Length: 285
Image 1: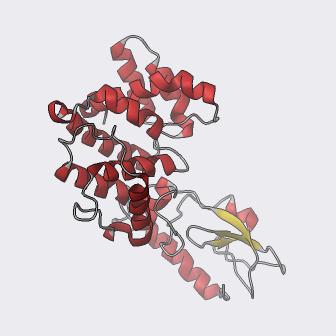
Image 2: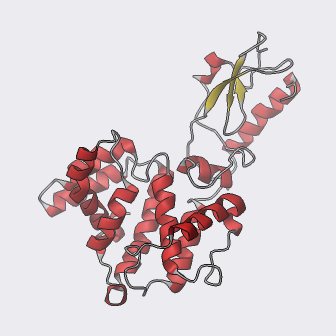
Image 3: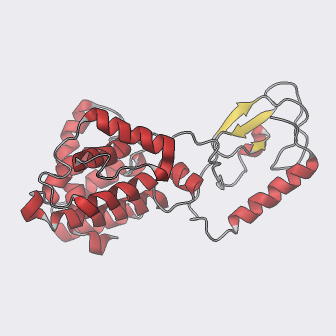
């Protein structure tokens, strides 16, 4: 973009200081997404306020918030990226923490809006979450969220079949670049599931939960409270914690190294983790 003057630079530093003290930002930490950048015209580093020398690739720019710094300075910038909505093009397929910071929400809007709709009209629907909706309509919902954000209309007059909405929610989780249960915690969850003593197992699961990034933890917590409500309507919808575990295990967790063998081997443990989270949501979260 255009030039940055030392004055703009100072105002950028002030802006960043103000952001860190802004109370209505959910204070999830987020790392910057720096990419090498060629600046046109003179630019100053927004970290050290010194000039960025050279004609090409003078520094790096965060593609989520637009912060411009020297390459060396980028190692020292704190994890205070506040994504700019103008730079975040999509809702689906966007990193979970990046999305909630860009929209300044506690959880991804897709999760809140779909769950609200499902709880309003779907809890008694037979096979809820197990029955698949029509793929093209699910893709329509995804496009609506990508285009209209929280203004997306997913009401019954547009999508009378509740399985479209459950499908759109499951797709949102599957499309995440880092699953709700992160790659970093995956094997720890699987190990916890393998503990035979139920009390020790619950304790182990609780310890691993504490390792999740805050936005992931909050999303999982909210989803489990919802799925618990689903199981409380089991006599109508025929869905218990185990059935939901089968559906949500592979949706919420994927092994870091994508091998079919690992996936097959871990499936019963993925199911068990989700089942434990649903059955014990009141003590775990």
